[in-house]
Length: 279
Image 1 (cartoon, rainbow, N blue to C red):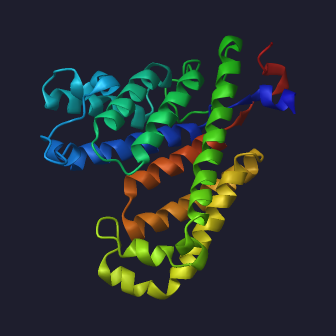
Image 2: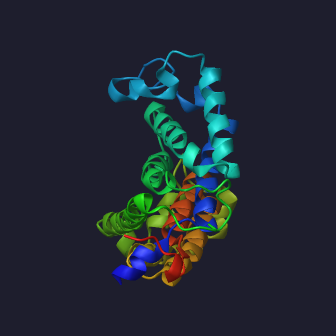
């Protein structure tokens, strides 16, 4: 087991797809939302990013023109999305993800997951010498980076277990989830609810949607501790779950980020033993 773990290399095209999805989710938000929409004033406070405490280190709080902050973030995210030089873009990507999460007044949760995933990817990507993250590595990772990369990949898998395990735990504490009524109420929500025509169309499927959501999230939490084949099935299951959430509740950015997290956890390229890094 230890030898297989040490021989595994998380740098695969699936990891590239994960980074692209995260960057795409952030680009969609920046591209289609004005600064007033991103940073609305609440409770009488003026519009603008939150810059108190540690938030003051955010890209949006450094005193630049907001357009400079926006286009700097877009430039970094485009480089990440197309997959250019993972080693050199991983730290700027985390800073943009942190800045975005810190400066927002309200969040749907996807920004926090993006920030954590981008941070966990840094130890993995600093040793990644590929020009494009879409390619399968032709040479093994240098020994000085391999341990950090494997540890970072394990931390991503733990993050999957925590996110989905916690989701199931908190849902089961609510009577609406145990009785199968939760999705009915979610679709009626004034902010995140489904369009009236769609809500009426799927109204009778409320209990099935509620309990299948719980079952899928439980499977995704457990899959983090399984082999790579199960984790790749989990990507398919998670994509189906979040596609349904996108269609019904419209949480597109959140869904893309969660599928990205699953893709990153399923990323693995086997290195022949003759080429495995020496300890």
